[in-house]
Length: 467
Picture 1 (cartoon, rainbow, N blue to C red):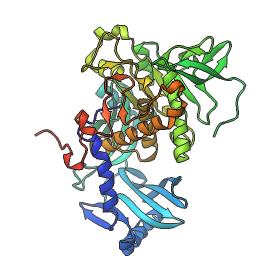
Picture 2: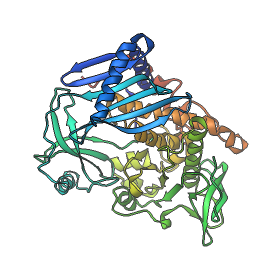
Picture 3: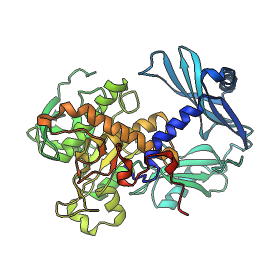
């Protein structure tokens, strides 16, 4: 959950512009960059021309199928995503999506790079790149994989390309994406990739407990019984859902996030009598389950990646008693925020972290901050970043970063409306505010009135930087 204060609400307008542009085929060859935006019956010949190009590049293995999904809302519609390669090395950001209706292409979107002239044999090894990254941030690359070779286009689209190693490293407050020149070892580019917001058969150890949420509302919680203790592991859903309690230990939290230590059963939130009283753990665990249900029942999607990948959250990453001595960056991320780290956790499948909030006697900006997992829209918002990562992998900056955040806000609100009937005694009231259940009064954003929080409500208000 990250405050894109000038970009966030523009996302919907960006999407609309993209759809309008798609009504006419556009093949723009600028500095070896080809932008495809083809679709609509009025541009059938241009669409067929672009489709033929994609087919030819596919036969030549320049384009390779990365993923294909049937559209759950439009019968017969399929969305295929292709990635571009140069001499077997992927080109960063070069992708084409093709939508077909019963096998016939109806639209194409994406960016291709033509006429690339760059050597793909690196002078540096993967180990060399790892050591360079360790020195850059006093960290070690963590999350999913070792540094990988990619061809990096110049961000200004000048036609310059570099062979680089790409890797991510968690620094404690940032998930830095580093791009290291594979010949010189120079840092070429870096950005922060931390996203800050049908039942299975029962098993013998499965149990359903009774929990109290952050606001004192009662709810059922799906857990696992082991040796007289109940653990926050939901095995009743097709995707395993885990909630880990860091018990206020920041150093342990950081070690888990950067991959220094693994998560074990002893880290799982637990209860002895299955009457759960820790609201942060209850709401995170139940909220993840409801988010899974929302994605499945509304879109037919099986979990965050479409194939029921594990869903993991961390609660109590810090101790409220330590807030007086907490540095500003720790305060801003682990107390007053929630985030999704896409390469953290077991096997680098990603996890969400929900901030601790403030002690009841303190406020920030005139607002009281409770445990952030107590807001279902925040829980769903952070998990939605995983859906975005697994589908379109939007670059987390500029307009694509704003779209990333906007999609998460929409799914957050959608999940809140979906789950409203599940609350007992009317405790959950759905609305178009974000975080209002734990950040009081008012929440932090509004989909109904973005400008109330200083966010733009029209693309004409796009923030393009400070003068």
